[in-house]
Length: 303
Image (cartoon, rainbow, N blue to C red):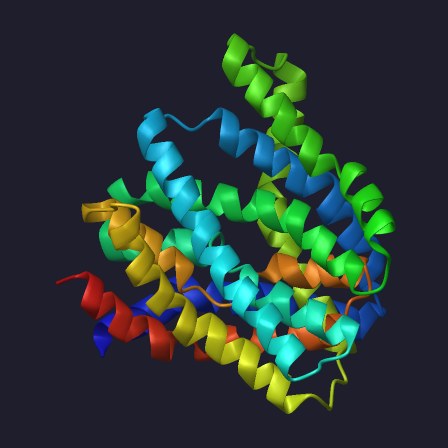
């Protein structure tokens, strides 16, 4: 019980406090979340992707194994959610919101500190790889899914091509391949913008919660929440065996895959107007319920 309390105080409570600050800021100053989401998505996140990629030092085999595992543990639940949406005949925007919520998890500001607490610093490099993959995928495929909820495929692809995160990825690969580095002042600026990404996402979540008056689709909320918190970890346990993850890589990977819905999905949903109130609701519910699913999972992984 003491360990659970410490887990909540060190990892979940700071997230709730920062989101709460955004909530009360919105209530006090009536801040519109849309401009904040644009700054986070088009400036802070690209800088964070660039810094994480260029500062990673794992061996190529470890990188490919964890990246493949991360892609699989995100895409498999997302595909199941898509089939569920078709089966239950969700309307287009709701189906996109469910897939968005199920596919991407909060592997950064929740998963990284939780891995550090549970498995130590050795787990952080592996968990960071999962987070980078998640971040890139939600900023590319996530944008495509979200925009398809309200746009045609052609418009969605055009939105994807204009996304700065895609170019941040390209530049990071080039910098690694040719051993390049940013000039001092630019490097400091990029580092500061990257540091602002996670706080920006959490403040934005609070701003969106202030505006939330969602009252419908309880079945879709339940479906997305159960898939993210229960079904996704079970899929990850099986896929860890398929990808040959062992030791701390297995622990970090499965724990990352079990995280609640990513805050960034609310950013993307707000930016492309794909049921942002629904997505924000699922983010909140899965975050609040996550200690009840993560605690037995931690006990399982520690064996």
